[in-house]
Length: 159
Image 1 (cartoon, rainbow, N blue to C red):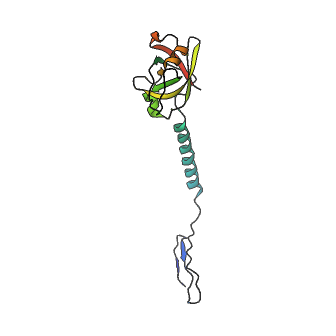
Image 2 (image 1 turned 120 degrees about the vertical axis):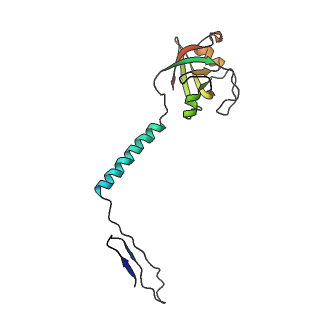
Image 3 (image 1 turned 90 degrees about the vertical axis):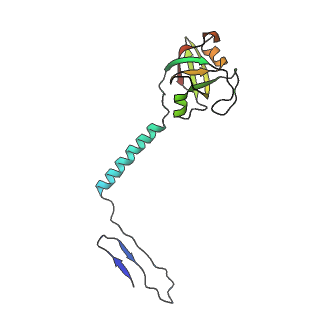
């Protein structure tokens, strides 16, 4: 019988094999349980990393009301990979927001002077500042009014 042991409480052992005994060798590893200090540190790190993970996963800019410039564009093939027309209620969000998080298909409500339109994010606006929104002509007419206004200040929120 071969038995190896060390003072670190890690033990390796094998069983004696004979021609009549076909039992394979057995190895046993026994370590002491982690100390309370080690467990406290690991649990603290786990909790902190979970909080950071939840923070990173939450969509940014979910404040109730964001203010920015509202414009309109002629839709076509959008950054989300779909083709849309001028009568669809869609929007392009700023390249800053689009590049930072997954926004394709998210809904938002644009409001100005008592008017509003609910639109789906389908595109990326390269010329927009972070809180600016670019609308399809139909959505712009409903939320803002005349297309001749071109660029106006307005509010929007995720819904």
